[in-house]
View: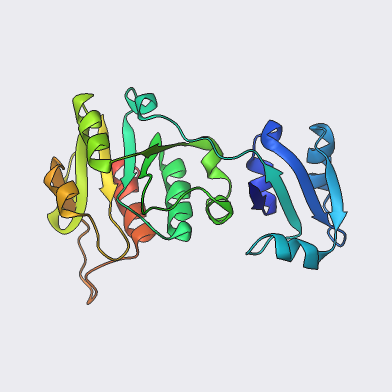
Length: 226
């Protein structure tokens, strides 16, 4: 798969990088040292060539890397903090949630295989390479994944405007939270299988937040960092 941007390159495990395309006009000693130290093959290209390779601000760096490897759900059973995304669609939101989760100490993020975002170049860029430092799990069914987590002592929370006030909650050691779709929120079948619903208290005129913003507030609170 293709990825781009300096931060993503520098945070990617070197052995996963196959080839790097650098803009002829970019002069970056840090990047060049990184490539030389790890013996990574690179070629010089014109900016317009790089712009045709990817959609986004490539900063003069595009690179080929191994396809992203998703983890199995069994890999999270001994973890303590998991985020599930109920058919999130926007890769920018996904990347932002990955970045927030990594910063807040989340062990893994679970996504469904159907009607959902995947790890692509946009997600890599938006997450600033944090996908290299957190487990991403793909499952056939979110509800089934929730039940498996519950059978391994996870308490699963859902997010909804009618849930319990987030500020009043004390969270157990093993916990998981479901973040809903950007437009539809959490599906009814997912909500039915949550152990408890929680909400973000708001005093303004709006009654909802962007998915990644809401996820950030919830994740940092659940992680004990706010």
